Length: 315
Figure 1 (cartoon, rainbow, N blue to C red):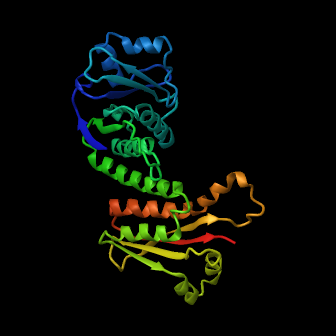
Figure 2: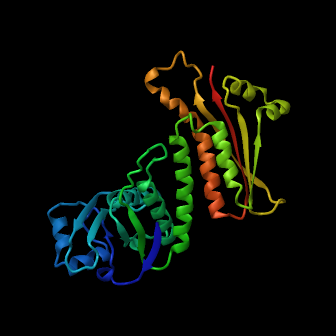
Figure 3: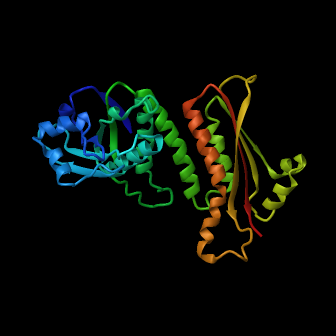
């Protein structure tokens, strides 16, 4: 997804859809008022007829609104209470969901929501995350991908917030990495597969990846872990990803994740109906991989170690 920004008049912005807000009292944002005036009261009429009441994250998509260059208008409610980070994320998620299948560009006239705490940069960052989340589909195991239409660009109405958008996309890529690994079937996402994914991160010069096998772990005294891995022909792995962004003498922060890619522990007691969910015992590892993916893209000035212990837990 690409980023653009514009300070043009609301009515002159060309997009597939322009997003404007109203609160639960029916008060329109300045951007919504501009569209209402250009369309001879079309927006306020929708409010008067209670097509939308301005409840938090409530949306109404209006095609073909006259007097403007955008092909559609999305009204989104901001509720009755003061905006918080949680409510702002709900609004952005609703916007992303409502426009996810629209091709072209989506213009976000949301800068009026910005506060000292929830800045325009923060709103832009969260918008990138919300749209990436709405467009995510797990297609790795599909023979026909059947890609769905999706927005190609976000247009932020206001000053340039491109750095925040780039930051948001990096975070979104990390989240999607975690989702992709969590969704992967366990015959593909094995400890060896996780090790391969970690090794790919080492393509970045700031990342060093170390894979420790069962023999080395046994020599280290990690007998409890090795005994778990012994039940499977798939070898267990200790995966260490070291990101150095602040120099070797600076302290390291560490994130740890459990990577049991298939957990049959207590299999005689578990119901067969949810046996497929045994793969989710590696979601801690997926979270670490996603975190490290985002770190590689964000390149913060700090040192971070991501560590995963991964094995199949089989009888």
